[in-house]
Amino acid sequence: NNSVASIDENEVKFFLHGLRKGDVNSKRYRKALIAIFVNAIYLYDDKITYVFNIGNDPVTLPFEYLEDVENNSSNLMKDGSPVKTA
Image (tube, rainbow, N blue to C red; front, side, top):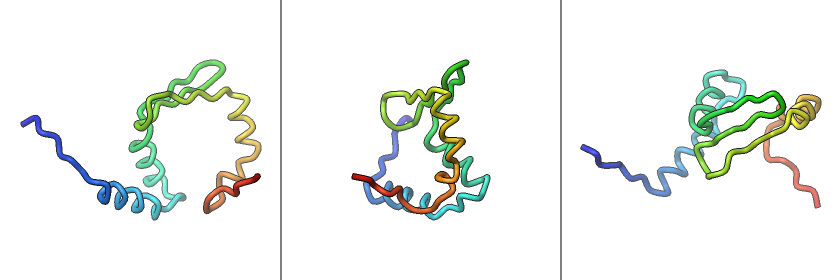
């Protein structure tokens, strides 16, 4: 049978809200997030390209950006939404 099950908006919201309740310190949870949202990662000499399971365009980050993120990694460990600046 080649039928595709359909899901409605409420089921998607329920699933995404459930993901928010995960333990960011859990290796299993982090691996699950990657498996759900990341389709592929391509590593080059000067950049990394991520292909996500949502959207149509891959995201490419130069290594300089990644080094900056590593230097400011304390921001990655904070809980809550980012603060918006004007």
